[in-house]
Amino acid sequence: MVNNNSNKFKSVFSIMIVKYIDYMRSMSLESRTAEIRLAQFDKLAYERVTEGVGITKELADEWGKIRSNETPNNRYQRISLLRRFSSFLQLHGIDSYLPKLPKYDKNAFMPYIFTTKEITDIFRESDKLHVHRKYLNSSKFVMPTLIRLLYSTGIRIGEALSLKHSNVNLCDGILTLYKCKNSEDRLVPLSLSMREICKDYVSYKERMNIKTEDDSFFFTSPCGNQCLRGSIADSFKIILQRAGIHHNHNRVGVRLHDLRHTFCVHTLHRLCEQGLDLYYSMPILMTYIGHKSLSATNRYVRLTEEMYPGILKNVNKAYKHLFPEIELNNETNESD
Image (cartoon, rainbow, N blue to C red; front, side, top):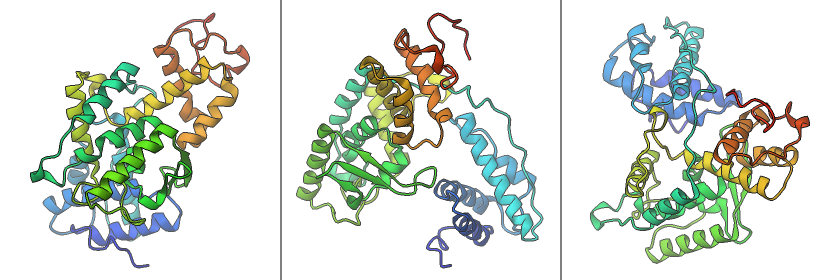
């Protein structure tokens, strides 16, 4: 199999990294995130390792160091990937160290949920961003549309930045997402207002002679390059600061991904306000945001109750076994 990433990696591990990614794809395993993380590992190895393909304890320890503003889950996933890659090396007869997995509480991390006022402030400040002619590769150009899309649909930032114009059907108001986090494709509907915002964005790109062909990326810089996640995150930090949102939440701070969490909580709130039964609404939300099971979506029930106390007061006790995160109003309020 010819891999177009064969020249992407530069360290002594480059050949084996490509083989490992090919192996993951052959097994129908989600490889996009692994490829991004292995590119980071390759850069570290390129700077520190000159010979020998096996992973040493020293290199594994360096990779496993806690990064600034990193969640315990992200660190766990990084080390877990390196452990699997090291095991792959061993299967190919290469002596390689297997790093130990760190312990962490999967339920300890609490995302930041924006209030409706904060969302309004974020929209306002994103609209004020300007791109200087000297910085035509800046991501600021896309922020007003991108932030509204993330909040109104709940899609992941990686899914948004991977969109091409052929994936955005503005006539029917449908996004087509390919190879999502769980290696599945899915369709995401757009609201009428979001559809109009996207149309205005495309019209602006056309007036600026920025590519809008089917195979071109939907979110690009003014010079036509695909937006990078890091650049988007930096622009989002500027917006948060100008909006007066300075929370150092849960050590990792407020993140772009919290727009997805906020979408889920605000959506559940609206559904509860409309009187829609959780028994029916939770599976819909689960499918819409691309979760594989109710357990992944379940925590949003608790977050919704915490942000809107009493909103779940009419939930029938019979659903307790379906939504164990719920603390019903006539039961104890002890934390889970």
